[in-house]
Image: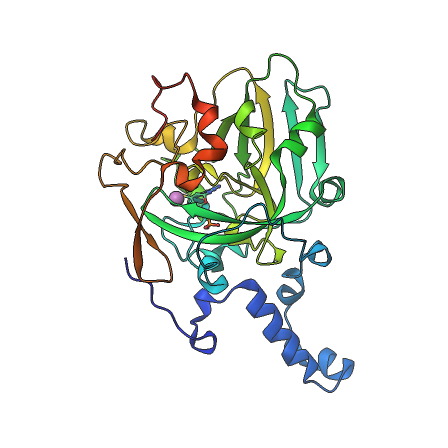
Length: 320
Ligand SMILES: Nc1nc2c(c(=O)[nH]1)N[C@H]1C(S)=C(S)[C@@H](COP(=O)(O)O)O[C@H]1N2
Ligand SMILES: [Mo]
């Protein structure tokens, strides 16, 4: 695949991030004579203000040095303009369409086999958890990768807030379902809403992360605002975006891609260079923005932290 890099001022509108739009409009505002000009003009649309995120003041957060990388962080403009988010289309340039997603009010339902079922507003949740930044690799099942500075909190903190009951074995995550803003969801052959799942043991592993920010700012919508999962040892499709519900359950969830094509996408989806996708090799990956292909690593380089989770499960299809 070809990634055409342009300088910021050459960027076509459809690649501009919401932040670019917001900042540019603020510059316009700053250059105006004052409130009179603002009232007279109608130059600044309401959208410019809607782009502002009420959690912006929380970022940047302190980087946790325990999660460092051996490679350069992907350019922000690329990571925020080359996205998989099928709710807004089956191509990568969904950032503009995703601007239609309302991200406030936003609440996450936590239910199922928990002591403290709750519906928690995103800004209340953000006050209850310690935020930090982590640098993680992201390896898409399509054999490309990025290196991303996520801000957010350990998934284990959320598990603690929920208080799993004895029977809880899995967490099932669900994305919003709103075909009126997400045109991809009008395509009824997909099993909307997007669903993903992990075991409770995976959820409490140190690496399992809930992202609410990226590049020292709140998540833009195309990257899964206001809250998404990040599981760096698994293929990117497990890192479900724009979560509205987390259900603790005794039943293994069937995820979105597994429901569509179980011969190609399984529950575990751990990265493994030796297990090809039925239609392509997983041995190497294109590191986006670098023009390089590098060998893919077992568990995406995180074997030391996660291999133990799968001891005794060798009979399972762990790597698709
Ligand atoms: N709800 C939802 N979450 C999703 C997807 C999606 O289509 N819908 N795509 C997944 C895939 S395939 C990848 S590679 C990552 C991409 O995350 P990024 O756009 O932040 O890089 O999001 C994952 N989460
Ligand atoms: Mo992906």
